[in-house]
Length: 116
Image (cartoon, rainbow, N blue to C red; front, side, top):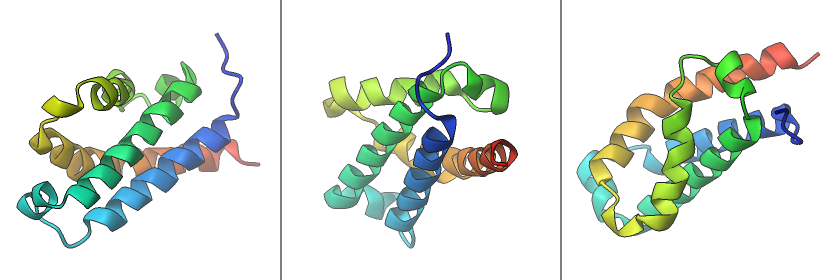
């Protein structure tokens, strides 16, 4: 089923939020991240935005960026909203330091291929 959302807007949301997260965690290690509630809250909020943008991309996300774990990306929003008391900081840290740079690069490449 096609999405009613402009994929370019969704890709821009993904890029914006990955860039924000990178700025928020710049210079931090995992321990500093865990102890800074303000940064953790900001990162989790951006991850929620990423989740929503991934939902808006619909099935096209898997076609345009097949190497991304779309189920996991979409599921993190539910986890953050409904199981926030059981969020594993290690998982969040690994996600933002290991997976998001690839997601950002893929989103930028896809955006470049969709723009005239």
